[in-house]
Amino acid sequence: MTTLVPDELLTPTEAARVTKLSVSTLKDRRLKKTGPPFIKLSPGRGGRIRYRRRDLDEWLASAQRSAG
Image (cartoon, rainbow, N blue to C red):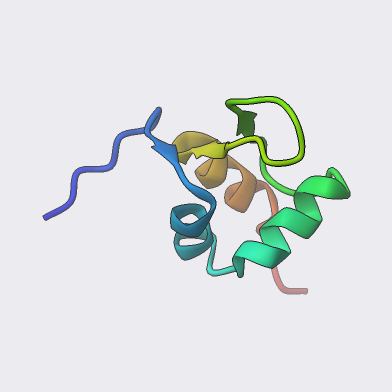
């Protein structure tokens, strides 16, 4: 059984698994500023990106729509 840690930092690959989006879709949404909040651990284009589990959960919840 996996324990979810709200402040756990996830790689883009791990975040893609959580959100059911591809890594490239997450990157595209990051660049368009329409994706979940992220942390850039180092400067420049090759900077390491991480996502907090809690931020992903909140972003997914905010995108939820009801039918009708």
